[in-house]
Amino acid sequence: MCEFEITGGRPLAGRLAVQGAKNSVLPILAAAVLAPGESVIHNCPDLTDVAATLDILRLLGCTVAREGDTVQVDASRVRCGCVPEKLMGGMRSSVVFLGALLSRCGGAELSYPGGCELGPRPIDLHLMALRTLGVKVSEEGGQVVCRGDGMRGEQICLSIPSVGATENAMLAACGCPGVTTIVGAAREPEIEDLQSFLRAMGARIEGAGSPVIRIEGGAPLHPAEHTVIGDRIAAATYLCAAGAAGGCVTLTGVDPGHLTAVLSVLREAGADIQTTPGSVSILCAAPLYGVRPVRTAPHPGFPTDAQAPLMAALCCGTGATMFVENMFLSRYRHVGELTRMGADIQVDGRVAVVTGRPLHAARVRGSDLRGAAALVVAALAARGVSRLSGVNHILRGYQDLDGNLRALGAQIYPV
Image 1 (tube, rainbow, N blue to C red):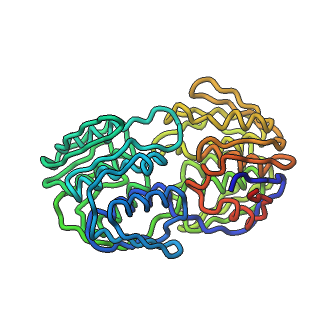
Image 2: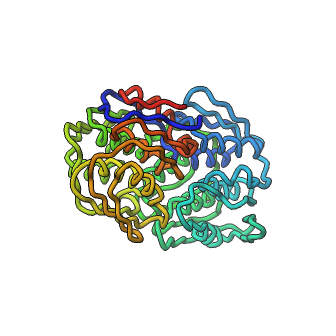
Image 3: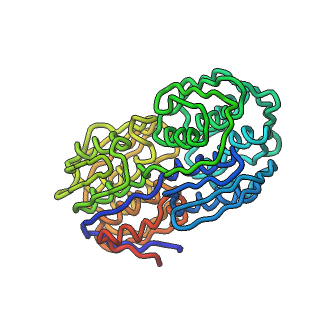
């Protein structure tokens, strides 16, 4: 698949089941190596990032099988070797294998992780957390070599609530004797989902969803069965698509509590939002209008991953909105492409001011996962036929995005 051809101006309508969360399933799959035997993961989305993670598991000696959205990982014969750059280079979340392999094998050697180019995202916090647990870390020639012979439970204080550093610390701490306390932990729902899986494996862990997580390391672990939560960022993207194109859409399989900040902004922009414990419905009978400043922040603040799709939806509305991107330096890479579609966006450093007006079709290119999704959102509202390249980025995080949108009435086709 090279490009999407998108004809704008068609409102969306219908029901859609939201995929499993990309940002949950990747650390959960890595956690499957903690115990010998077969773990079963349900609601596992079909994404290129997931496929890459399964390739890493196979390289480590795991037997992996997939049927539909269920993945079985048999970690009976884990080999604690080096994960090469070819497998690590495609996604940043692969760094979570450091904590998993330290817990299972007492050591790990990985190439530096890749992923979307969103500005500097060093893994210093990950390595600081591991060093606090007694891990000896050396960095040579793009390789990170960790030795955990002297690992022990300690208090880890994170200067910022890094999701990846929190996950790595949780996984490594499961294999440490003693008690580990993570202070300043990330509070994202995906952290809670990882804790649920670790508990199912027998880990003594509590506090996920709060700033303090406590792990009693050394508990015997066993394989487990787990169902991944719904993807709140995919859900936010479909809600923004309905906001841009108009119409009435119901999303199932997602917890509205995970979307509080996004739903609040969409309501303020004029969307009619209704929720049940497992679904969200949006009705947009008129263009969205400008809202108070949207500032990205760690959970429970507005998620940085939803910034680009929301910006695209507000570009084709009315009124002005200011965005303040507090998480990543290069999170506005979609702005230049949106302006090719007629969007009025002024950027100054971390601040972008969007003034809504009608958009027109254009040939555009996505350069990162959420930015590419934002261009789809804009194209659904634009006059004429747009062509989007860079679809490979979308495949990293959205399962059958074009097929799902077609089921809701959109004209979007791979070409």
